[in-house]
Image 1 (cartoon, rainbow, N blue to C red):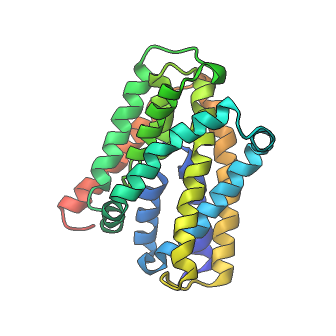
Image 2 (image 1 turned 30 degrees about the vertical axis):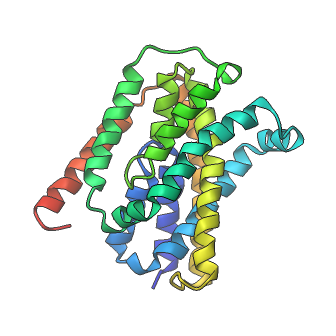
Amino acid sequence: MLSEFQAFILGIIQGLTEFLPISSTGHLYLGRHLFGLDEAGLTLDTMLHIGTLIALIAVYKDDLFTLMRKPFSRLTLLLIAGTIPAVCAGLLLGDWFDSLSKSGVTIGWEFVATGFILWFADSAKKGKKQIDDITVKDALIVGTFQAAAIMPALSRSGLTIAAGLLCKFDRATAAYFSFLLSIPAITGGIVLQLGDVISGKAEQVSFIGLLVATLSSAFFGYIAVVWMISYLKKKSLKVFSVYVWALGAIVLALQYSGKF
């Protein structure tokens, strides 16, 4: 049974790791495994993602109001283009990716891969593209990286920020577009998960536990978004590479020794 303390900790994990480039799905798998909460999977994940969606709405409320007032703007087109690859990946390969997420067999290697992608993108020649310079092709490339991040421990924010840097976005724009693009992705995931929750296919979890998890995820997600935007303007992604390499190595060592 999910306790309030466990819900709070998992909310912290989800809120921070959704927007830091270190993989929320991979960290949540490790957190649930540590607490022995595999049975709380779908319902808990849904509420944790609702929390991070609340954080994004709070940070980008002005941009979202502008998009609602001008639904046929160029930014809307870019967000649609960037979302298409993830939709295709989810429809075609969703069941396979779900099985990988539940088994956790590949997450060590995916943490390591995330580190290499971040390091390579951070080492690339700096770009100057701002939001008005982004093309539909750029959005599709970023969206393709987002689609790849459906793998359990490939960081969505990490891969989309990296893709933006490789497409020569300036660092602030790479973060801005990454986080804005995550809103339809997270919303779509929540809608799909809610279908199973409402139909009774998901496990039952206490209301208080879910509330604590959601509020914790929203609060720490807001902090992570604001901090990451500020951090990325001047500082390197390589520190996150070192972190996920170390974590990946630990996971792989535990897996090969039969302890995980």
